[in-house]
Length: 217
Image (cartoon, rainbow, N blue to C red):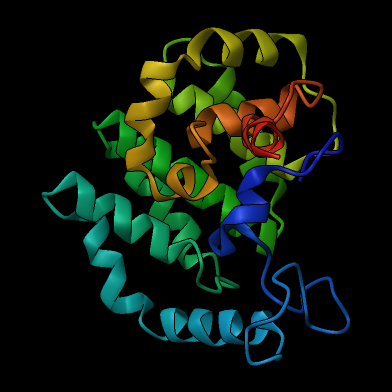
C-alpha cells in the first residue's frame, strides 16, 4: 500500500490483499486468525484456488449485458492467480471497449489488485495515465488514483491530491458504494471512497468511527 499509511482497502477487504504467503514466510499474511484458531490466510488461499480453477467460466461474464454482473465478475476475477496474465489482458481489453463509467472503474481496481499479487510495471504506469487523463470519467480517475497509490511508494503528486479532493464528493462516494471494493472499505458513516481518500491523502484527519466510539464512553 502507499508509503504514507495503509489503505482501508487492504485492512477491510480480503479481496485486495496480496495472495497469502506471497510476502509473509509464516503464511498468516494480514488476515489474522479465524475463530477456529487457524490462520485466516489459509481459507483465503483455498477460496482463491477455487476461483482460479473457474477462471474460464468467469471470463465471459466480463461481457455480460448487465453492468452489475460485469462488476461482480471483475471483482471475483481480481482474486484469482494470474501468472500468465490472462485475466490482466481480459481486463485491459474490457476497459478498451467498456462504456459504463462504473464498470470501467471496477476494471481498473481489478487490474491494480492483480498487479499487487503479480507485479507488472506497465500496469502501474497505465493506472497513472488514467487518473492523469482529464477526459476520463470522474469515477475512473478516482479509482485509478486509488489503485495507483496502492501500488507505489511514491508520495502522492499534488495534481493527484487536487483531482481526488475535487472529484470525491459525498454524492459520488455514495454512488460508488455499488462497487464491492468501496463498500468493503467503508466505515461508520463514511463511504469507502472517502475513507480511502482520508487514509491515503489526509491521515491527519480524525477517523469518524473512532470519534463516534470515543463519544460513547
